[in-house]
Length: 285
Image (cartoon, rainbow, N blue to C red; front, side):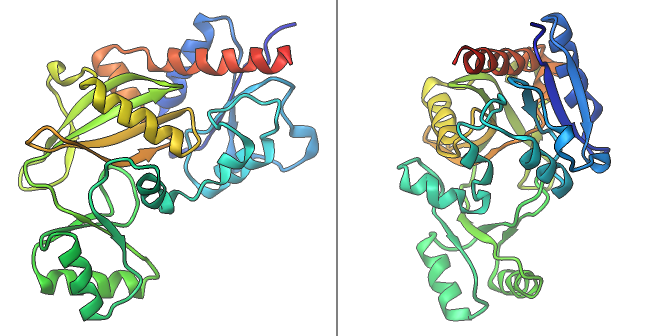
């Protein structure tokens, strides 16, 4: 029986390389590749996937999420450890990481604009400056408040928009790393460098920066992905100048092609092989 292949739930916002690298990885393994345009998908029972198909969603828009939720079944191989993992509450991830004993910067979510509770929260985080996180990609939605007027104005605006930001301790001098996890192993890693006049970072253009960090950091990244009940993710870490590692977040889906195109790490191949092995296990049952 010919394998059911990889079904990729995508849309026009997804960089072409995210799907094309997976397509090439499938072709190299004689596996079919099917792109599903979430914006054109018809929610019809006849559109269900064949048994033991593989599925991955690089798109993040609501239409793509609903498409994936419609297509998923127990006999479809995905990067979710179980069907309920599809509904993991991403904004609650810091609480889950804390509960699992993983090392994260001190964090608190803010729902109130009242000044005194906000001052007490900042005191618990070690004082100003603090980092505000509201979600988003590529550092958009991550802000730093260096003064009380800045913090107050940001909180007033965010709460007026219905956004409850996370406040995190600022760790000066820390290095930002990304570790890509597939299954239970780190398959790629690289250091992010600071942008000029910015506290946020972008992937380094130094080839020497593309290597997995020390085993403790990789183990932290793998544990973080497991807490989110996934089997794939781009994990953001901070390395304190003293050597301690902190977990920032797990991104799934994540933009994985950068390390593959810049440093030649076959991440797409590892992704396809993991899903194919899972598909074979499902078929064997």
